[in-house]
Length: 256
Image (cartoon, rainbow, N blue to C red; front, side, top):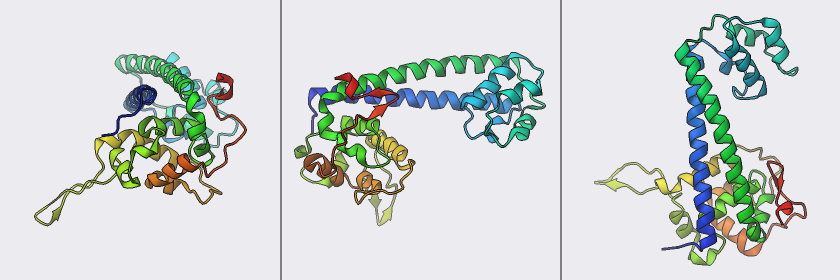
């Protein structure tokens, strides 16, 4: 079996720790939205992002008092928002009980804390991946794959593709190949194994990015055919940009 070198194993530990933290933050957000639903607050169905700047400022104002001041709420709504009347309607008739208020306050505190740890993990990933940047930075030229995505991919499969005899072996090792569960001529579940949950999440995230004007090395081929990643890493077929890639205003070049 393939055992990555020490620096890749350490990178993987932090990357998977970050993945768990993101899952925890998602669970906390779902819990917070459930409290809003129980309290008859339909803000999530009106705004595009229930945790965006507008929604967060409105919820802070709503949490302060049980009486809603429409003028204060209107001042908190972004000027480009088109559903100002719907936002006010979604707040009227709400009632936040003491237990729900307690849960919402603690959920907000927990989400802020998780954001800080996730940011710290990403900074640490950048620092550890910087010495390896020449091996994967060219992958970021593909639209949809950011520098962070490239680091997370490398943390799972490494940078030495000679360890794998073929692309099929790589995709199987990464846990992204469908299962072949058949008995008595009946096909059962063909979902991927749990080993691929880390790359699967990154694939979905990258696929949701804007994919206009993609080169011949399209994102779908890279994500579903690891041989493309293998070729990109080995051959460097996509030119490396001279500009440093910025993640959360942290430049890879500044870490030199």
